[in-house]
Image 1 (cartoon, rainbow, N blue to C red):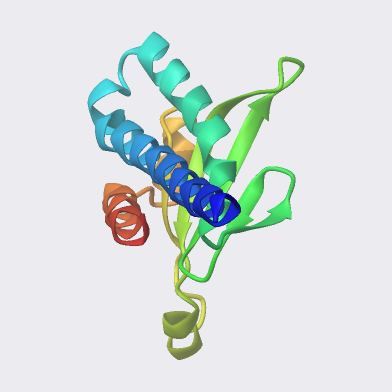
Image 2: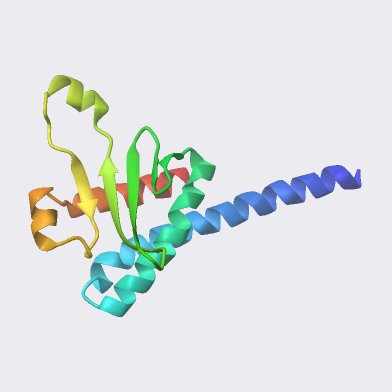
Length: 142
């Protein structure tokens, strides 16, 4: 009896904790556009996201490499600053596999964080709508 109750409490606690991690990612991403011009806040937010993004493996993301995770809908790439090993920039890419079959060489839909050079963000068509779509996606799966 007690082991069953303990198991249920453990499952509830796991989902509560897991939900809090996703809520924290959502909160940080919702505020990212507002704080991105403040270097200190942007750096702290990006480092926190770098710690939290790998936790998304609990909701179906998988590692493709040490600093890249993806699922069928989104890919997240993290860039570390060497030698400190802290995350200093991130890229969110929306998977468009169905559309890409219809439109050859369709451009990637992605959002690049502020630390990417402006020229790179323009060249790769960084789109804040992808950030918004990712936030909505996380709200649904949390």
